[in-house]
Image (cartoon, rainbow, N blue to C red):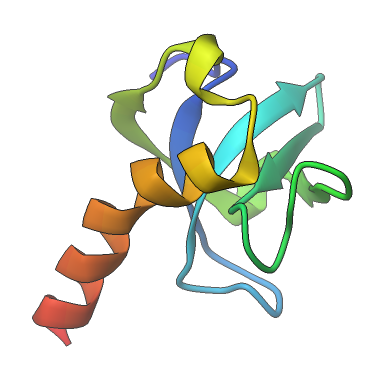
Length: 85
């Protein structure tokens, strides 16, 4: 799977382990991710690439403008996770 801006990821390590987030920027070793609530666009989390798992979902960059739109994008993923538990 290819790393892209707008990819939905699953956190494998850290305080946010088990949470879904979206990539807003990346480089060779790190990705900046946010969830619109605990990690808003104003202060994204810098995570090592080995600490995230990519999903098959990539959202259009136009939906990454506000924290509310990011929360709405991630809502079905978080609900599915809660139902599975």
